[in-house]
Picture: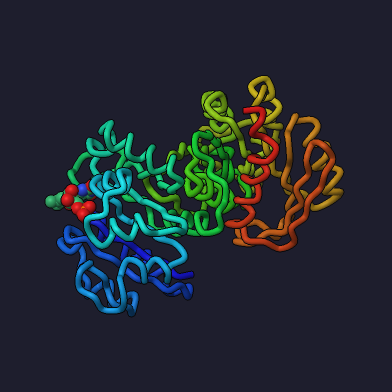
Length: 388
Ligand SMILES: Cc1cc2nc3c(=O)[nH]c(=O)nc-3n(C[C@H](O)[C@H](O)[C@H](O)COP(=O)(O)O)c2cc1C
């Protein structure tokens, strides 16, 4: 893919070098335009070294034809990252007074803006109106993250993690449908049930699928919230993640957050059993017998909240898989269920079947969890939207 990257005058400009590195390593070609302000925050030398290409800064110095037209013709996608309040305002008004803004106006292919600014700027009603105008005009705008800002304050406006921008570029380039205005609640990871104060009963779920779903929803401009049990993976700062530990905690948080969502994707591997008695002190006996009791069935408990919402479950089965998955689908009142096998645990790829309440079964063969996450969201957009 040929990526034209417009870098503007935000303190976050240095972070975009990580994105250049990631995309060029994967074989993409990246060319950069730096605004005059951006040159205070990152250097043309860094961009040239990492891209291996000339860096474009001046509109009226001709090197090869008319720059904004030549670059528009060359690129498959234009990514403005970080995007200042200034460039967002100019683009929303069609102002073309330097190389980057002129290129935006003349660019006929997909454009992605990745805003980064202080919370006060981001929440300014004029900036928000400009963002809305960009979206209405067909541009994609990635929501900034929440977290620590350069000013020392904490709030929304932070430049999103490179991983997320990377995924948003693929979403925009593939023309995947936007989830703007949709609230998607995801559960992920495993749960832990206490044996004593230091030991737990748990399972091997890694949380990878939930992370991919979370990234996919945000990259498609949806509102994602994740209730996450313990995991072996890191989730970047700035996303709406609620940490839980036990199945009981998971249920408690879900009761609170399900009413917020339009779509629930239950990817967590919730422990089916919990020790009947939890020892108050660390157990030292030579042998230890555990009596386990069933935990509450979260999805069944949440059935009264389902109403118009689209509910997607996961089922990991190693025997009579389809029959068991169908039973779960029915008993838990789900709209569809993803049936996968043990081999998917902790891996980046999976081989799953998707069973819908209508009886339809879809198998995509071996596929990355990253792509499967989008497949699940497409399913929701296709069959769930009319009802939410
Ligand atoms: C230290 C410093 C940090 C800045 N960071 C940001 C920022 O993160 N986001 C933003 O919208 N503007 C930021 N600005 C203001 C812009 O640099 C300024 O509006 C500039 O005119 C933007 O020009 P450009 O959009 O052509 O790059 C910052 C300014 C300074 C001095």
